[in-house]
Length: 90
Image 1 (cartoon, rainbow, N blue to C red):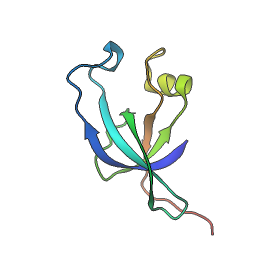
Image 2 (cartoon, rainbow, N blue to C red):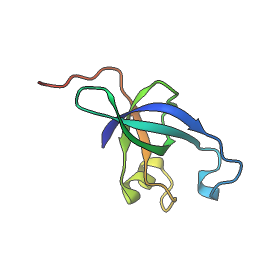
Image 3 (cartoon, helix red, strand yellow):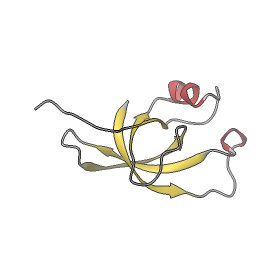
Image 4 (cartoon, rainbow, N blue to C red):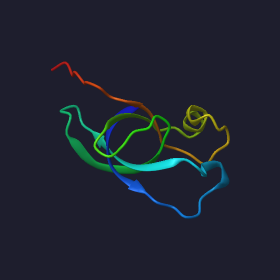
């Protein structure tokens, strides 16, 4: 699991049947300093996140589809939480 910032949305007129009705968001991972890195990916939103939100992201095949509540779905990256505050011990 890692922290990321939502930087955009994906519009797909056709997608896998297990993803129909699911929102796809583009996320950029956050470093220890809280700043975004260059690592970007598309994630399925399960918590109602939006552009600009900092989120918790799960990035593991089987665990990701289980977190989405749809076992066997073609998902590797899932947003599982919205971050209110972050504290990093120096």
